[in-house]
Image 1 (cartoon, rainbow, N blue to C red):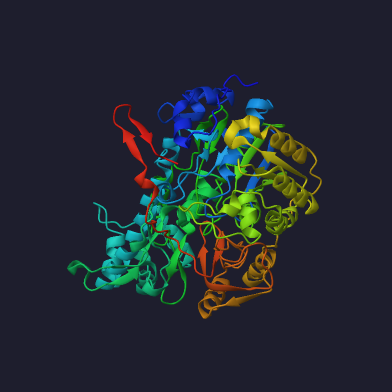
Image 2 (image 1 turned 90 degrees about the vertical axis):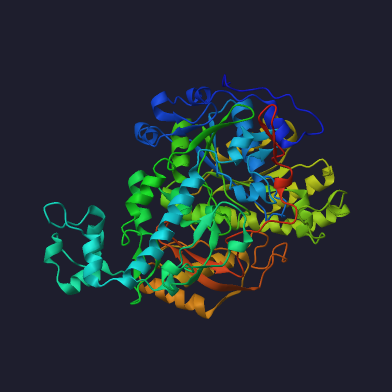
Length: 634
């Protein structure tokens, strides 16, 4: 057994998450690194309990075999969440601290939006958490802040370029873009050559360009109506969803409507999560399309000359952050794309590093956001496509609470006490709700992986209810279904889950299968995903039709699809619980994250900037000024 493993002293009833986290003194992160055979030149320390693991580890361990690869998804959740992060952490604590396996947990970095809003943090819960919990949920190593800075630098550059092009002649614009040096000679800098190549101009001397070529090179001619790039910040601020910019007298009347998204919804976050190397990230950032020219051609960050600067802001963010669980098992925290807008998975580079570090017979467990219809689907069809990695097992987390809701139980509302139906035995309600679990199992099995159902046990669940879920899981084709108590008991409460996951990994018999090939049309891909939801057809708005036609014409139809859809239903309507079918899925708009590498249709009404509730989590958060400890985080 690993010498870093820490024995937990569990209490009943389970104390508050922050109290449990504060009761355990974390090991120095160098001890966690040492257990993974990471030498000091493999990582940079960020204080005592965090370190950035360098990508050079992948190259150094290139010849080493990978461990088993496990993805954790869930059934369609209630607004309270079903404990996916908690289960991911508990499973890894079981594998590392009780089953003596090399294991690394790969989690997304939490956004401060939910942390201070209504959902709370994302470090897990109870006795299955990442620590230090406050550092995990607040700032961490600044990756989200780097994304915010890079995103907003690009936003500023776009509007500034429109401003300068509107006030200058072609010649003046060109002279400022390629100013003469002290000897009076002009030259193109490196980033300009990609634009010249795109325009079909092979000349390398600025003096040789014709007036027509000068105009093509210097004038991006951005169509303000086509700009899809918005500013971001990592706070829930509903009043920034739509804003007007350019109202200052110096902006010469160049007023434009735009808005803010939350930082984790930025395409730069999606780029970070899907990149495979520093050079790949540089290429992806440069390829990001923020709008079109008035002639209808896509304009990229590199056309604007900013791809290199964006990479500089992101150069440290590309390295995953090493942390630890309550029981001393290692965690890699990296990226955190919005799960219902972007692909909702942690990074490819974190998974690749982890798979090499654990080696053959070790385990890497990574979490996919929200229900398996969103997170696991995108994990398979987007993340695994770009990474080339193949999972052997998919865990689906289920709770009696959520299954009762899907069986027709009363509405579950965050911040309000649960209805009586959720805290007393009602086997019929559970059995009716298992239709949701069954569809998630069949959808996930279709990828060729073995499916293990983790039933996250609450104190109010009865044996008859838990037994009903196990029976339904096996009937739907699950490899195994295990009752877990990791929230109350830590890794000890997930040992059976760990054994089931190990067996599932060792007994996989099929290759990874994607839901759709990339060489079919955008509409055919959307229809394949919609069919997995249970839809009988698609309804495209006029705007969506226009965008699909444009992206196909621009040569982007080969990209995978990332559906932006509510997490609370298989359908577009959050009130449709269970496993709805026969509905028409409305696609109101289609957008593209070309740098990240996907097309994202907007299903129904989706907000990319959450709002704060009447009573946000920040009411409970404070600092103990005597000890310096954070209190009230959940």
